[in-house]
Image (cartoon, rainbow, N blue to C red):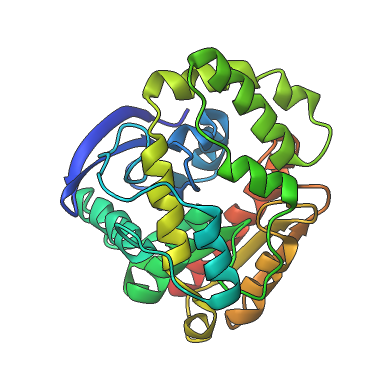
Length: 304
């Protein structure tokens, strides 16, 4: 039976960060970093418990501007014109903060928890934050696992029209609208037939809504991603043991994003999961958890 500490909030890097821990204090520390607009509970409780059962001290947390962590201010809603300028004219998007600031949040949380170094597992934008933390604070990262993420390389194919439209849609105006939108969004992102997930979506949406929404914060996070540019060249210097996991049918961060990440990091391992979109459905957990377990424990054994 692994231990579980309920959510707590700590001051780190000048903001409040809400975090939760699964697993024993003396186990290998593993930080889970979530993606754009996604609260820490998108790392499912059972997913965290299964990782903890493999001998990890699993820490999930709300990024800045989401959930129960600090909500910041500033920045306007992103316009299609700005996206066109970025894509075709390479004119950068203005941002209140960048991915490096979110990487500093991650390391500051480790400081607050007295963790000298940890395994970082990031999904989507979380993968970008984990990459940035590995680049800027290599001594703090025992291993890197980048899931359904990318290097920021502008040559990677853009999201499908359906996934992009979903990202740019105006925020829902009511709880009922949010619950419907949540189901629609994840249906697009999963890119397949997942009735067992769809059955759980209303309950998951209720939980997310109850923890609080911050549409303006999601906009700032998106700006942070777009303003941070490409990490591709810098990633050539990464010496940290790296695992890249990506779905073969990802409509948001295309499979080429994962392949580019693995190709950019020396000796990175690439795991392409057949039929996985931009989500972590339960049916893929055994393969994902096995891969993280083997990679992180392998890196720890090498370092010992």
